[in-house]
Image (cartoon, rainbow, N blue to C red):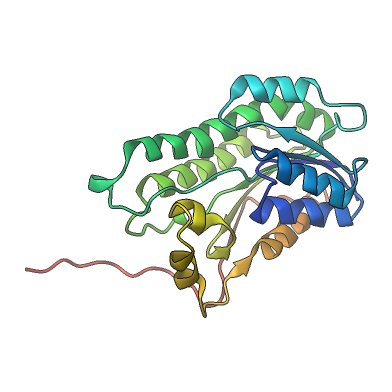
Length: 249
C-alpha cells in the first residue's frame, strides 16, 4: 500500500522521521513546517518528486488555505493526514506560568490542528483515508508543570474520538497516537534551548526516538482499511505512570 501523506511539523523529530519512513515505502509526502531550509533539505534528501514542501505556521489559517489550494498535480489526493505539529513551552507551575506561552500552545496544538483537519476532511472522505493525531501520555497522566500542555493533548485525544463518531460510515480511520518520553527537539523547545535540561531528562533512560514513533505511525496507516486503532499509548520501558502527590503539614 502507498499513497500521499500530509505531515505537519515535518522539519524535525517525529514529523521528519515519519517523512523518511513513508518515503522509504514509496509514498509521496506533503511536508509542512515553518523552517523553509529544513524542508528544502528534506526535498534534497528524498527527491522533489517525492516531497512537496509547504512553508507555513500552523497557526496561520490564511497560509494553510493558500498552501492547500496551490498543491500541484500528483499531490492533491491525500490519503493520510498526520497532525504532528505541536509544542510544549515552559515547565512552571500554573500560578507562575507565562500566559502567552499557554496561548501559543493552544493556538498550535489545538486551533492549528483542527483548522487543517477541517480543511482536509472532504479530501480524506473522498479517499477513505486516515487521520493520525499526535497526542501524548500527558493527555492522561498529569505532572507538575504540564498544565496547559497536558490540556491541549487531552483535547487532541478527545477530538480524535469525536472525529471517529462523526466520520462513522465514511471509511475514514482516526487514531490518537499518545507517546511518552521521546528524545527529539521537544525539550529544547520547551526550555528555550537548554541542552543540559534535555540531556538530564533523557540521559540513561533509553527513551523512544522519532524513528520509533514514525514506525508506529506507518504501521497504523497501512493496516487493512477495515481496522481502526482508536488510541495507542506508547512509553519506553524505563517510563511508567506517575505517583500521587501528598502535601503534609
